[in-house]
Every structure is written in structure tokens, then in C-alpha cells.
Length: 260
Image (tube, rainbow, N blue to C red; front, top):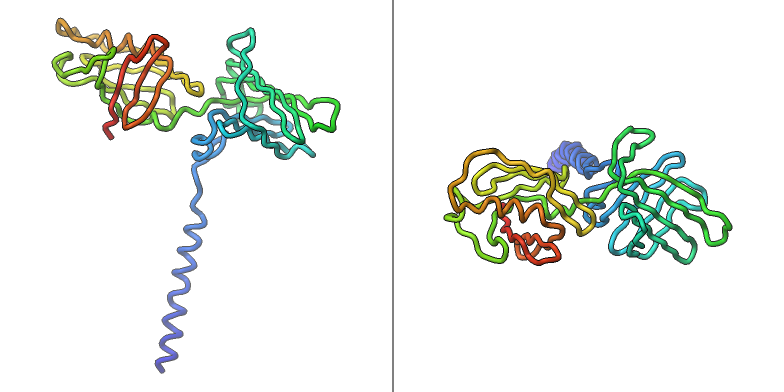
């Protein structure tokens, strides 16, 4: 009798185990046209093309090309620095490995996916061949830079133009910005008015553009105008020790502290 009860108990538990296993296996990572969230952390630029289908992922550790072209299903190239073209809006990469050679051109211009209709900020051209071939296969598609996910946070100002800031330098509280890395936008408080705008990200380049603010009158001595000017003059950044430092070739402009 005890054995029979044990068997019945085991059978009653089996469906529950199966359900849990299925639930776990059905869990999928968030994906987009350009790949997974993990890809966006590993690669700074991704691109895709149609007819024939191909994909490109460029990272600091290597460049991965995949396609549905026979003989060119997948190539891994060493990481490469861009060759500066005469046109400042174009970056060119010449890469080679034991089996293939490719030239990748990235042009900063609006590009529309020929199938989905999605708009991307970069047009991508690739010429690629196996090293045993005489001619290159030419491909075109669209791509974008993956904004550093670490920027996606709320940051409160600590330093302005090399000096520590205090609440008394502003209206009621310290300036702050909240960056949305997925949408390349930001919003926040400049020290007197609400501010918002767009960010431009390209590998390690970061710019704040289209900055707008509300029109509330500020008290004499308020440093909001200096904060906005510093944001607009930023073109690079570093992140470390829960701090976001914004700079340009002249030096450090703003230091923010992560607050969430």
C-alpha cells in the first residue's frame, strides 16, 4: 500500500515538473532587427542587409560577418580601426583573415530597410570575397551604433568646469540628467528649468544636441546656463566609480554621480 501511494504521489508531481521545464525553455532574450541585448553590449556597431540576407557585428574584440551566401556563411575578422576618408561622414575598414577579405564602409546618412521599411541613421556597404576568389561580392544595408548601455541611468551633477557644485549655485536642487540609451534621448533639471534633448553616440563619441528648456526666470548667479553650455560642448565621456565624466579636447566639463 505504501509503495502504491508513493507511485501515485510521483505521478502527480511529474506534470508540474514538465510545466516548469517548458516555462524555462520558453524564456527568450529580448531581440531586435540588429540582435540581442547581449550583442548590443558586446558590439558597438551592427548592420543588416537583404537579398541576400547578411549581418555585421563590429566590436573591440572582432568583426563578425554572417550571410546566406554559399561559401560566405560566417567570417570572423580581427578588430580594426577606421580609415579616415576625405568625406568626414564616411568610415572605412579593410579587414582580412586566413580565408576572406572585406572592405566595410559606414556612411552617416538615412537608410531604409528594403523589407521592413525601418529607418536607420547609417548606410553600410560591404565588398567581400574568399581569398581564393578574384572578384568581390558587393552588399548594401543599414546599421546603427549601439549606445553604451551604462549611460542609461539618472545622474546628479557634482562638478562643473573643474569645480565642485553646491545647491546654492542653483535654484532649489542640483542639476540632474536622465539618459535613455535605447532612444538616444535625455531629460532632467538644469538647476532652474526642466531640460531635454537628444544624444548622438558613435563608439566613444557622445554629444548632447537639440537641448531645450522651459522659460522660467532664474535667480541672479544661477549657473544653469553654464551647465547647458557644458552639455552642448561635450564630445566624449568616461564612466567609472559610479561617475559619468563629460569632456572635450579642452578638458573635463561635467562630472555626474549615479543615483539609482
